[in-house]
Image 1: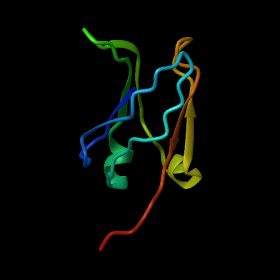
Image 2 (image 1 turned 135 degrees about the horizontal axis):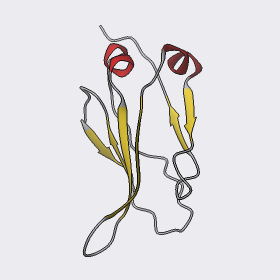
Image 3 (image 1 turned 180 degrees about the vertical axis):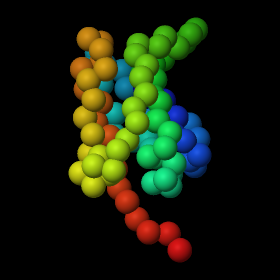
Image 4 (image 1 turned 90 degrees about the horizontal axis):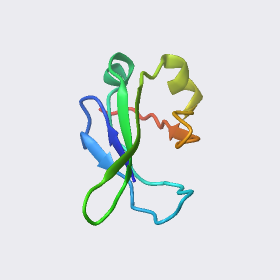
Length: 96
C-alpha cells in the first residue's frame, strides 16, 4: 500500500488499495492540492507492507514538485532497491 501525504490537501493522507503481490501496481489514491502549495512544500509518501499484526514500512521518501513537473503532468521516481519506480500523474483544473 502507498500512503500519500500532500501539503494542505483534501484528504491530507491518502492510502491506495492493498495488493497481495511481490510486484504490486497501485492505481488508486490521490489528493486535491493547490498548485501554490504543491510548489512550495514537498509531497511525502510511504510504501507499507500491510500485515495482520503490524504494517512494515518498505520505503519512504518525499519529493518537491516543480512547475516543469506540473506542465509535463507526470513524474517518475526511483526511491530504493525495494521500490523500483513510483509514477505520479498530475492533473490540473481551474476552480472558481
